[in-house]
Image (cartoon, rainbow, N blue to C red; front, top):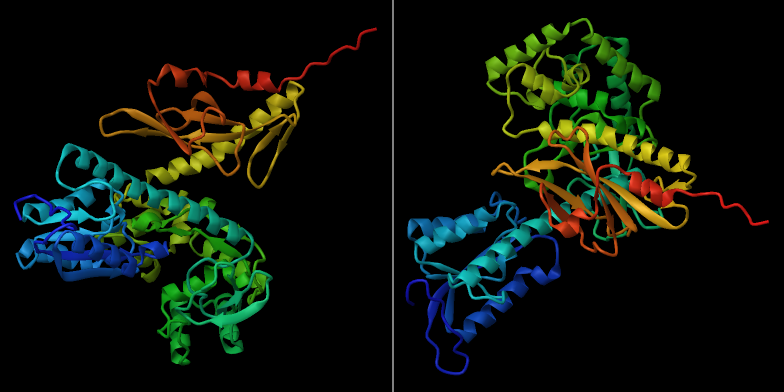
Length: 522
């Protein structure tokens, strides 16, 4: 085969064999992407074009967001780079199977590694030939961006669904913990079976709840609280006592300071369902969220620890380090950073004599802020957490001001507490969204607006924020009849057709809601 030349369809005549490897990947999303279905389509393509498949690389049940954990793709790239590849063509079902990388350049990079070794990549189910032409390059770039965007949209939808289930009292993810068990229930709320560790529900309609575990574990949990409150034992001393009694954790490990602290601080032991304490969206770095970002449902499960015991323990923990000044707390954290060279929640909680991460979060507003004050900068920029917290505080103010202003003008407003949708005078509905300002690498500013297509508001009120994301810059009143898309990206300067919907204030919206008394004619 000539350099950078794909084999042509030879279904009508004799074939010329080319040696190829096939790469297949399936996550958990669709049966259409099963490795068997991918392999069938690849082999049909190979047969038509006289291609001999000499090796298969398969990643089963692997996300396409990152190359980490995709051992087959890693091995394929390693074989190519080392010169061990006994093929000159790689067959992939489509662009998304190569990967849904959040950075389209990463997908292109792995393909370039192959191309540099004169090994081409062909996407058999795509409508374009990956022949290096300008058309294929453009289409491929769009496909890569679409693959990444699909993952982002799916992540947002899944997260919203999980939050809703948590608010209904169902358990989302993670082990039950010591003293608790996960139980599977059907759509009618009937118990089906207890789930062992590692087991998951198989039916979409099934749900998971927490129930008290064996009596000896429930007793041990209450002993932990009693020892901590009545005997004033530290977490380390409690761990030593439990290990001396031969009691193992739910993971069949010895107890540590951190595992005891987890029992003493987790609200699930008083029946509360708390979610989103830690984020790991799109396979990026784990983020410990501040309490204002948590999703909670109180009284979701049967409590195994009396509330009085739990809150007494929290009070003791807060009072235990209340005697330390802010400077003393920061000095301890700074010394730990200098001795370890790195900081994390686990390091802090496992270090004897250190206040817990919750103490730093309560004292300084967030753990990230405490890190910054001692000169430690995490690998990832967490500034967006502060912005998100500010936006969550800002949104109710915008909503309240709008409701008040419309009422002053004689309008009638009904707000759905579940969806946030406004019904104005029983005539039209509006949805208010805050559009953050993003600065591009080139220095330009962009505002991304997401339309709630599930609610279908008549008008979406997009509040564009200033570059600091602290106050409203202007407002866009976007009617559904003219904007049927799921999203819209605004720049500093937009087309005239867009700017016709821009307003400096919301007075035009209020004017739409205003009502006048009409005097009946005599």
